[in-house]
Length: 362
Image 1: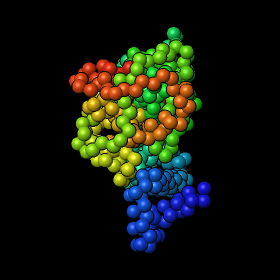
Image 2: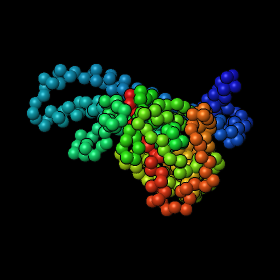
Image 3: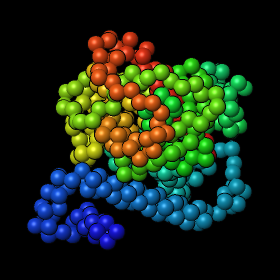
Image 4: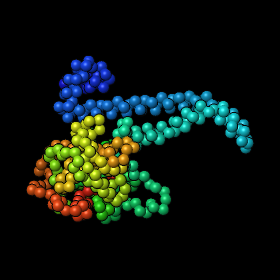
């Protein structure tokens, strides 16, 4: 515990520029050699940036409240006349207040939405969880209802957030991102046929943004043997990869290649991939052409198309090792993936039943 506290203090000094040149070089060497230290640095930087953004929002809100208090609303309402000159005078006399109000509304849409609605941004870094909203238009009837009378009842209120998950075992263990299910009161998963099942969170790994779910619904029928393997090693730049996820209510394919062997800000626990992703892709499997799962999609470069990040698959295996082995069911050791040599259409036909939409209720 003492070593962890010392390391946190060194990271704090490093990010604040308080280390000597010799200390800085030594720490950067440690960071390059130890992925867990590097990940702690990235995580701590994310925390500091989030706190700065939140502080700026609170400061602006205080200024807005002060300006609002200085305006005599009753006096203005008495002077309201249906004449254009009133609008001009109102603008001249209160332009600073109106400008601040507009800025506050804009910042609220970006920063407060980010904090309160599970779309976390750190500068150019944005996680890919999805807010599930009820759109009031003629397309409402296209949205699948998670309640199914033949299945165990889901909560009455609509799901708030969603993402993607994929099967780790045939008996209902799934992998997704921790930020997808974090803070959930209940979780349901939905397969490609639209059937929903109750699930529970059985493992959380905040360091690598991973979570393991277990389907606990009596109506769930055990899957056939998984058509893919979890890759144990790293892969190189230029490898062709693809992902399947739920940025909308139907599964969406994304294809691309590994563009960097490290993630955001040099994070060695992740890959950067050139694949267009959107909120809802978080937790989706990243596969190579040989049918191996090489990572889990969890974030993208903010406002940059085709720059996504995926947690490396070896951390999936580490998370899975924390689950009691006798509860994982019968495991089939694949000598080669059934996806090997198939075209993309046939590969997707084989894996679509193993990829699920995650729906979170709170």
